[in-house]
Structures are given as C-alpha cells and as structure tokens.
Image (tube, rainbow, N blue to C red):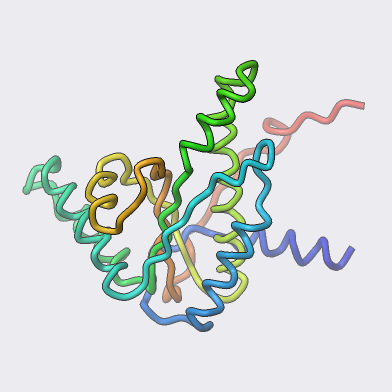
Length: 201
C-alpha cells in the first residue's frame, strides 16, 4: 500500500509550473534517463510505440522559443503582443524543452493493417502520447523540476522541421518547457467528484 501511496502523492504533486529557471536539482543525464524510461514503458495501442521526442537543451532550447516568437509575431498584433512575449520569455528561461511528436507513418500503417479500427488509431495515438507526457511530467516533478504543457503546433511545425531535421512523418503534438521552479503552483480548484465519477455495483 505504501508504494501505491507514493505513486498517488507523485500524481497529486505534478502541477503546471510557469515560473522556471535554467537550474536543475538533477543532472541533464538524469533528465534524459527519466525521459527514455517513460518512452520505453508508456503503453500504446497495439504496442505501436509511436511516440517520438526531441529533448532540447542550451542553444537548441532557446532556438525553439525564438522560432515560436517569430511565428506568433506574424499573427498577434504588436499592440497585443506584450502578454505573449512575457509568457515566451518565461519558457525560454527554463532549463530545456521537450517536443512531443507522434510518428504518423506508424498510425497509417496500423490503419492499413487493421481497417476496422481505422478511425480510432489517430485518437489512440494522441492518448498514448498523453500518457508519455504525463509520466515524464510526474517523474520530473518527483526530482524537483517544474514543467508546463504548451501547444504552439501547428503554427511552428514547418520551422521546427527545418531547424531540427525532424522527419516528415513526425507530427508535433505538444511542447514542455522544464526547469527548477522558483514560485509555487497556482491554486487548483476541483469539481465535485460525484459529478465526474459514477460507481455502479
């Protein structure tokens, strides 16, 4: 029971953290180990293992947020850009960024092999990717790192592909800046569980 309690506490402690620094209580090697473990062990439909990740540190991390800023400046009026700029600066100040992709060749291969489930495979791919994201997010929180999940795709997709040599079949799903937090997470409100969970016996 104690192991289960530790896991549930880790789930509870995982929160969205925006106030991040480029420091880390663990080494980059440890961060990479956590990420590889999560990708290996996360479940996926038909054991398809379609999740693909780019882990960006240093200049590569900063380059991604420059790409994002440039893309947003094309669509956000200059007089309204200040809040967006502030958010991007906070992401750029972090230790690194994880880019989450799904290999769409894998999805389409399963659609061809199992046509009965054709419409479900894209849904299941997103579900599987979400589990990878959650495992990593929770594991990073357990070692003292904060993170948030962002979605600037598809706005940045082509620029990311060119900048980092991403294969054509990789579909960008989400971005996760991470680093040592310097402020507590915001208060979180919860809907009544009776409205969300029905127990039938």
